[in-house]
Length: 404
Image 1 (cartoon, rainbow, N blue to C red):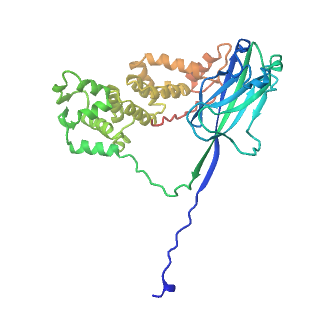
Image 2 (cartoon, rainbow, N blue to C red):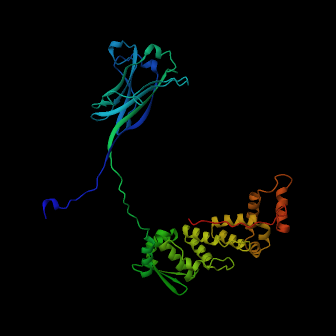
Image 3 (cartoon, helix red, strand yellow):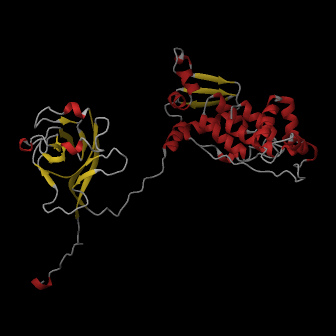
């Protein structure tokens, strides 16, 4: 291969960009007792607290008798000083003497928004200052609106100049997989590896891990982390069915519901549905998220006929979200609900909930009149013929409770 036949390797062009900008910040300095500060001497100052802008500390110096001996105290002087260590710190400055009359006629000395022949001011070391020896003539200041109640107000703005190289962003990305924590814990449950507690539920055994149960349920935590914890290697449960306990363990380890089984078991027509029993288990073991998930699942089955039993169930197991939905649904469909079997169940088993339902009706019946007992007539009208006071049939509305 000859020299002119040698292959060439081309590389893609690269680029970068230098960006110079300012980091801005402000400080408000109040000088109270100006008349008492006078006479402290030429070159002597009052300093405000240090403040930080752009990684450096700064301070405002006010000279009531002036900084320059040649001015014979005819002027007040104001400076901004670099109060921390730094070398060749470049910055823009602005000093504003505030007009306290409210007219907005402030006296402003500013580097910002104007062209500078030599660029930003450079402070060489700690103690370097920028400002004005003849900031304001003292005789004029003392008769002006800048001085009020023996008080002066000065605003200071500093813009520290910084430079950085702005490189183009990487165009590639790395996708983070979905959390598989539940599957790992689920595997731990399935293979029973390291289990240290056995539950006996109606003749069936369930192996589990105390730490996992305690981390998920404060009730289990109180059982396992007590002085008698060593006794709890085997626990017999007499108030729960194996299917329900299995579903609860599934949630504890995987943080999900056993949807295939729950989909066909949420009907309120069956008082012993798996979802209802799982709600009871969630209440017993203080599994807040499981309770809310059961509420959401049960909410989808609310009808005129089922809302009474749903309300009773929600009240019994502290399902506050489900209870609120049931009360609102029953109140909006009151006449039809009161003719249902579910309402008869409610009267026989939970009479206290009837008063809560009436209170909800009183609070949510927006169409009733506010005078002459109109609200009572509206309720009575629904009870008598299933319609409202205008003769319209009661409209059923489904409320949806989202998973949390």
